[in-house]
Length: 335
Ligand SMILES: NC(=O)c1ccc[n+]([C@@H]2O[C@H](COP(=O)([O-])OP(=O)(O)OC[C@H]3O[C@@H](n4cnc5c(N)ncnc54)[C@H](OP(=O)(O)O)[C@@H]3O)[C@@H](O)[C@H]2O)c1
Image (tube, rainbow, N blue to C red):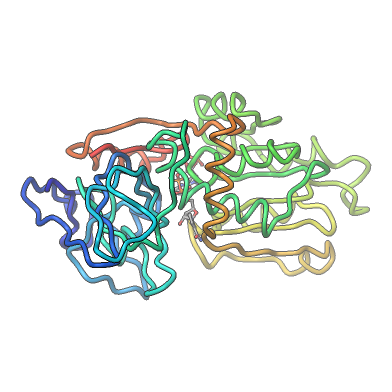
């Protein structure tokens, strides 16, 4: 099969486009999916580069989010048949492991998965939309809904709002009825976020954005604890960690699911105690997050912003968009 294969960690030139890579073998409890769409994530860059503390067996096919049509079923597969449209939940909850990282993923014509990782794609949901969901939107769903309990009374500041998790957080916050302030780095991204429903959009490179938040939300007075947003969504880390604290109201929730910039930022405990913050971590998703999102798309309540669709031979260009922060929403590769 055709596949994009990572033989060693490094830069983009380490992802090799192969025309005759071995097809995956279908075990008795497995299916082989003909990949129709895979979406890329910042995680693919972590995998390509190599992550401190995690040794991966190489070669590996990246691409965590995989949607397609079943091409082959193993003898023990009971609930799916050839031709079914399925989304692969990237997490193997039985044996452990993650598709596209410790298990071969979607940057290939075919992908093997055990039956227990399959989720049927409902009618009316495209392969590209389904493939956009697990890592970015599933994580956003768990962070905003399950862990964050965002609701109509919330004022939510979202950093990294233009990316995969970020656009998911913006769309979900609006569906939940909250007021949204999105931070972004360019006019084009700001316009896209406004079109997605963000109530306020701030260019954090060109403004003193903490002061812009105060202008919006410090009434009656932040020193008396009433001012600020009620929720900060921060998966960027680095210098933004304390800046986010300066925007948060007393009793507010800091939600985090990652650290794109750096995972060991300086913190300021004075804010944590005096403003009685509630810092809530959120990790990945459960199958229920994915079925809830599929239902939202099917009902027309959520439209996934797709930044671009690329053939397999141009997968590195698709990943470059993420690396160079040119992405708005999700990038799709269609093998
Ligand atoms: N825990 C989990 O299970 C889980 C699951 C999914 C993702 N994550 C994490 O969540 C984070 C976001 O993932 P994603 O796939 O949504 O990424 P993405 O699509 O690349 O979006 C990240 C956005 O963050 C902004 N940003 C700010 N500082 C940045 C920096 N130093 N480097 C790169 N981007 C920066 C960029 O927008 P601007 O240019 O507008 O600032 C960028 O578009 C990553 O750290 C990822 O590992 C965790």
